[in-house]
Structure formats: structure tokens, C-alpha cells
Image (cartoon, rainbow, N blue to C red; front, top):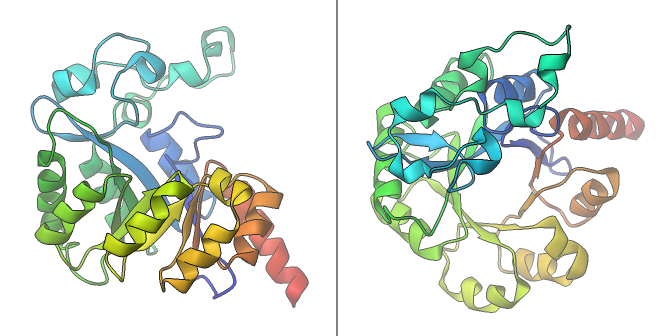
Length: 269
């Protein structure tokens, strides 16, 4: 449990500072480090599966041409999504052998099953990526999956995030009890968004925005909405979030942020 002054630590694409993002290995590492939440991006494959991939193309994380939306899950399962993070592993005699389960493409279903089976409550922040050729089908499939897990009701460990207000509206219609997070990367959009987003929606500004425009946090708080911030990786930014009353920090380095918060709690005793 997090205290009123201690933000929830959410692992951004897993423990992605040291591990290949969005792999099962990155998420297991994050849980081992004490992360209280996991963040992932989801995209829809050509045959209708939700997979945890940030980019629309595969060039960066799988070193191959092609787009997630034009490939079947079976085709993606043949790709290596981890080597890009450590391209010299073949030269390291002590490097572990490749584990296809932990470094291949990760389906959202597998991630949710991992969370459901874990020995403590873990929350999941799922970002739907837009624009996409499949439009609202992404949110439809996502809500259908949440229903399978019984996680489309109040108290669910899952929240849905997006920069797209329209996408979040879709989720709100399909599963009105699921917590929603309106992501924010430009302060100029906030005056409009504050008038249209739900009163109980969370707002998720980027840490860069808070650095450049700290007053926006006060404006969000005065609107009665909680704040979740991405991507918080160092001491200074963490302290900034604590001072602003942020409820959750999304980080590539969950081990480091958990350690900083633990030390802060010990020093406060």
C-alpha cells in the first residue's frame, strides 16, 4: 500500500532501463524490484490479438521491417524482441541463453495472467496507441479481455490510458467503471481537456511538462483530479512529483525509485 505522501511506483514497459521493454522478462524483473504497478502499450495484430508493443513498426525493437498491424501473432512470435537492448550478447560467454518466453513478443493476455497469478496486488496501466488502422476495435477488444478477467468493474487493478480523448470515451461507454487516465504532453491542450474529460478521470502529464510548466499540476489538482506522471527516473524528478502531490510515478527504473522511497520513509521515522 502507498501512503498519501508516497506515490505508487509503476514500471514503464517493465524494468525497461536494464531490460528489453515490453518483454515478460522486463515485467518479472519489475515485480522482483517491488513495483506496485506495470505500464504497457497495446497494439492489435492482423489476426486480432493485443500485444505489448510501443511502436507501430518493428524496426527498433525487433530489427526487422514490417508493422504490428499487418502481421499475425504467429509471425511476431518468431521474432526476437530483446537482442536490440544488448546487441553484444553473442560475444559475452557469460550471457544467458535466449529464453523465447521471456524475450519474445508479449501478449496482453499473458501479462494479465502473470499479474492475476502474482502473490500480491499489482495494478496495470494499459495505454492504447493511436492513430491506428483498427480505430475503436482496439478498445473493444481490450474491454472484452478485461471482462474475461472480471476486471471491467470498480476496484479493478487495471486502468486505461491514452493521449486520445476519443479512445478513452470509447472505453467509458463500454466499461464505465474502469479507471481512465488522460495522458498529457502539451500544456496548451489542458484548458480544453479539463472541460470535457470525466470528473473522476486521472490526468497523466509527462515529467518534461511539469519541469517546464509546474503550475499545471496545481491546475489539475484544483480540478479535483489525481495526477500520474511519466517518465520519472531520477531523484530530482521524484522529489518534484512528491512536492506536487502526484499519486503515481511511471518509471523505467522501478528498483531505483522504490529504493529512494524506502530510504525516504526510513529517514522520516
